[in-house]
Image 1 (cartoon, helix red, strand yellow):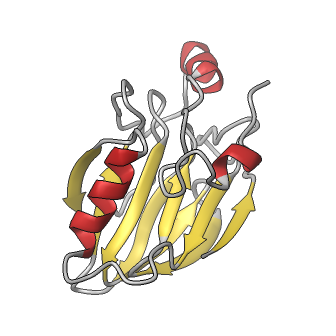
Image 2 (cartoon, helix red, strand yellow):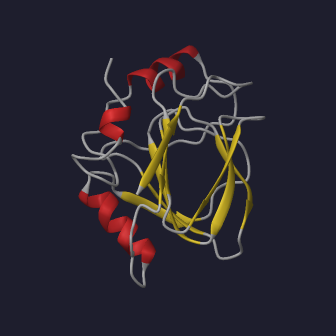
Length: 167
């Protein structure tokens, strides 16, 4: 598995996270088997990120102010814009994982017809959908959101723990 980490500055009305980077895990599974969605769900849940849904990714810019989010691409491929309007474009496909700290803008720009994504959030965090500039209270919540105990893919040894640090 190869990982890539990058920070996103606030852009337009999207706050992004003030200190935590986005992580891309390329080919997070060597062989997820016949049911990649179930493999992602099992791994995420075992590492304290209970899966919440199976679907595609919204085609409008949005972010979450109440939860960090992990997206596991079980089937197909998707081109995303991360960071808000005019943000960074990335392409991910089956077997890849995208870890988004709270506040990170994201949207699907294009996807294959067979796209299937598993979405999960750290235990105890409930997601919201934000489509406008955050209030001061939301910015404080994003910055103070509890630090997850485990990497959603690698558990206690995962790259998130090295890339995300508590203040």
